[in-house]
Amino acid sequence: MKKILFAMLFVAFLASSLTCPVFAAEPRYKGEYKLSVNISEVTPMGKAVARFARQVREKTDGRVNIKVYWNGQLFSGKATNELLLMKNNVGDFSLSSFINWAPQFTEGNLFLLPWFISSMPDKYKALDAVTSGKAGEMIAEKVANMNLRILAWGEQGTRELTNNIRPVRTPAELNGLKIRVVGSPLFIDIFNALGANPMNISWAEAITALQQNTVDGQENPYAVYLPNKIYEFQKYLTEWSYNMDPLIYVVHQKVWDSFPEDVRTIVSECAREAGIYNRCLSRLGLDDGSSAKWLKANGLYPPEDDIAATNPRAFVESKGVQVTLLTQEEIRAFADIVAPVREKWIPKIGRDLVKAAEEDMDNAAY
Image 1 (cartoon, rainbow, N blue to C red):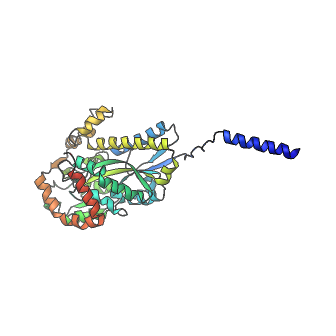
Image 2 (cartoon, one colour):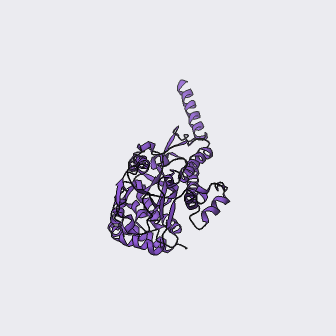
Image 3 (cartoon, rainbow, N blue to C red):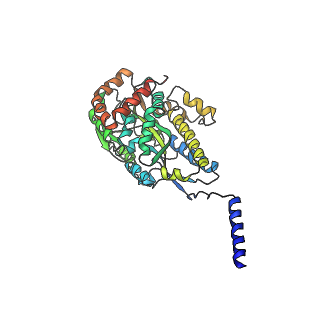
């Protein structure tokens, strides 16, 4: 009797297990996802990445809570450590510059080649053509080989030269100036070729060095020059746009794989919009007006009285800075001197990658 009862119960269990729905386990989310950046909240890049973290949290109903670690907190101010930390998943997300990755990721030097992208008829359209074209795809594939995924592209801007000694319009006027640069071998080669004295100093120490005249100058986009108030002690600015400084919104592949499809879609869309917002803020007042148009259309245009954001060139001039705008002929004098540096670095970056970038730029609509 007991055997018959057991058999009946077993059959009933099997029947119920076949008819009851099977529920997938709810994904396990971290209480906090760390996002590494080497900038502050007040920069164009900082405003955009803060918006990214906020929108992801809101649109995922708090499931993905991203905390931004400002000013290189995760890598103790040593920016060239960021790639290693991201590869090891110390950071879950990052907003990274190839300048900081360059020592370990030589392909990223593509954007740092002097007067390569910035020599095109419209440097911003040329950069967008590269990041959204074949070269951008090749970069993304190489980044993926390190278990990192590029979600979107942002930007710090074109890198300009400032100093506290004299206006610089010719290579001869750069001769002997001590210029603070990041620890990228390519930057060292560029400034050595131009006759300057490149000084590898961390950004955490750079402001003090500039204020105390330990170094004579530095090179950075307006997006870094303005928030750090470098105009207070560097009164000569040369717009020479010698290279571009795109940024990448990155997530570790392990983190990405842990997200369900709907969350991946939200994170991707938020990163894409943040990248556009970032680029437009960094280019505002410096491009052909496209950035202002997008910001106004999306209700993100800065207040009209914020001249530093809407017209950076006019703002620094109002602070007593002498801005030198180089002609194409004057820029060519600098570019010709560093031509051997470009040739030296092209094989290191990869001729196929450089060729792809050239084709992307040739196909751009200027």
